Length: 524
Image 1: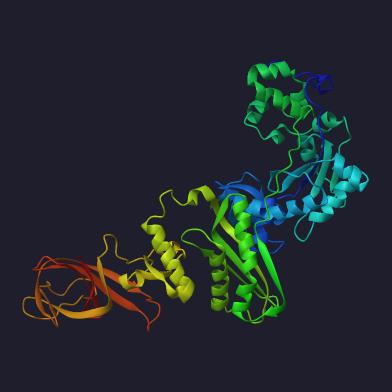
Image 2 (image 1 turned 90 degrees about the horizontal axis):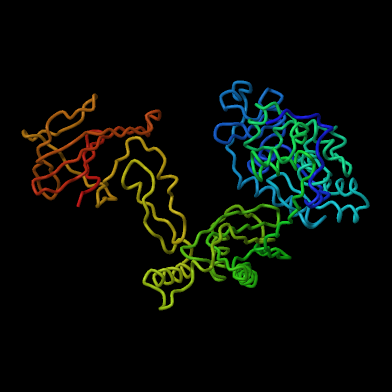
């Protein structure tokens, strides 16, 4: 690659490329940190860092003051700031928290393009005409989104890339708007580091001595095209201030949620459910209009005194209007957070799916679908917990792991996946006795077998003696200790499990708890 000539000798941009669009960019610094605070709370002055793959991708001003920087490893960042609050990057959270700000901007000026969470662009021409100038338009839009912990900035320039760099330029706190005059984009971009391109070729350019955008713009575009193809032409256009990308407005998502306000507030559940019938039908019809179905429903109840009850409901299939009304009624019956009448009910889809995935088959519904409809009808008559299904939950003892979950609710998999020291590994007994079946385990001399302080049996088990008679033990394994709450003298428990096979080749799971024996399960 030839030596770069002076920046003043940069060739003019290609004449066949479209002219850059005058663009307005709104940027909220450290948006992942702002989104984290808005969703999970936290003090404004708290040092916070958001990590992706163990590297800092965003940090708060307090963290930067202690030496935390983007690109640092987690150990280095925590060494510089011991009180650092650490969080993992969550793009869904960033988009979710940024959506209300975008909606607010669209009310002020339509045609917003979301470049990334915390960064969006608009065409400057329309807002400038409406508000009386580019600076006035940027000020009005900033005022719409600046609140609390949100410190937004704006940039105006030819092309979205240059406007983005203008918004990110260091400005005084009382002047958050940076305007690059028309036709002076190349002059503004020339001293900026090549790293702002955020491209894989940045390291290569740096090794070749190309350190700034001005150095890159000074290279003839044909040389870059020969080396990098279309990407080289694109990078040269950006560095030269000839960003010809259009601002592509997003398509606002349809309003799928529904709200019903009651004046005066209602205190009877049946009245609230009756008032939700039309809204529930409209809610399902709105989803159907965009070929969607709701599989998870969020219901928010707001009381007359401002208290709220917020819950996500699941459904074995998809929600219809009657199922939505049932969930509102059940939440009113089970919620103890409302101490006054219901002033407002909000229903919104927490999870949706394509309607084509839930279409009824050509030759009618199968047995599973008929069972689902039957159980749903019974549940609608008896209430939320009127129909339950057994699932395997978490716990050390088999009886604890049998959990009854209301039909349609999520099984407690998160509780099951937790570490349970002392729990029984697979395969589990097929028969589990909810009530303990006492028995005695004796040796060949008829003396009771126990477990000593070292966790060893005091003798070789020879027989199981219960109210139904005696069974000889052909083989056995164990013991395996189960220790619980040893820090609490009143609730502490020291037990040991044994697996035994009797003379009839039946396998049993026995427990010796404090010298007493009982049957926990049977391997059928």
